Length: 300
Image 1 (cartoon, rainbow, N blue to C red):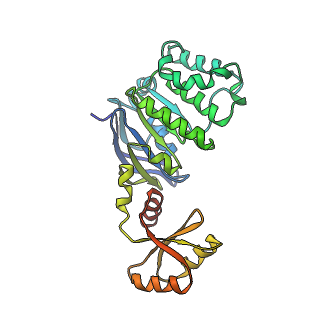
Image 2 (spheres, rainbow, N blue to C red; image 1 turned 90 degrees about the vertical axis):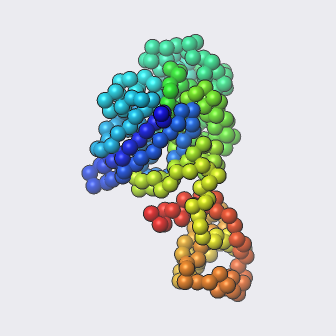
Image 3 (cartoon, one colour; image 1 turned 30 degrees about the vertical axis):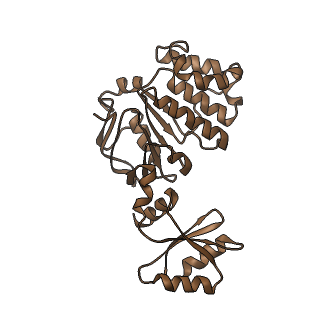
C-alpha cells in the first residue's frame, strides 16, 4: 500500500484551474520531487496534502487516512514546511522548537535523535531570535520544527529557495538521513541538481503532471536531436536569431549557450550547413532534466 495516493485531484480558484486531474502515488520512505515554474500548482497540491485546503474533486489517502475526512489525524502524522519562513520571528530558536513540540504533545528530548544532526548546527544560536538567523539557519530550524513530532510524511515546498549553494547541499544530505528513519518526503524544488537527488521526479506545468520518472530516466522522454550552440558573445542575441528561423522548432537559453531542436521539415545537413556558414560553434548533446522539461512544456 502506498504511503501517499492521490487520485483525480482538481482545484480551481474562480476561472483559474490550479490542479487538473492530478494522480500519483508515493511509497513509504521515498523522496518524491516535483519540478515546476511558479504558478504550476505545487503549493495548492501541498496545502491539500496537509489538509489546509479542500480539493474540488478527487481524493487523497495519506498513510491510509482520508485527508478530508480524517484531517485531524492527518495533521498529527504530517510535517509541513511552507515556501515562506513561517515560524515566530520574535521567539528564539529554542522557544520555537519547544513551542512546536508542545503543540504536538511531544518535547525536544523525546525526538532529539531525529533532529540531532540538524539541531547541532543551530544549537550555538539557540538563544537568538529566529528573525535574525541567516537563510540557511532559518530553513534548518523550520525543518527541525516540522520533524519534532516524528511525522510519517514530510511535505516541503521549495525548502531551499534563496539559500546559498553550500547550505542547499547540506540540507539535502539531511533529507537523505531523514529518509533512512522511514519518513516519506514529498518536496518541490526549482533546482534541477536537487531533483536529481530524489528517488522519483514529477514535472508539473499549468496544474498537470507532464510525466513521472526516475531522475536518470527523464531524458528518455526527449526523443529529438539536441544541439548546443556557443556564441563568442551574446547568447540572448543568438537565441532571438535562432527563433526567427523557420527550421527552428524550439530554442532556449542554457547559461552562456543556446539549446536548440530543429523541426521535421529540415534535414540535419541543412542545419549543419547553416551553422557552419554563420560560424556558429555547435555540438550534439544529450538532453538533461532542464531540456526535457522545456520540451515537454512546449508540447503540453
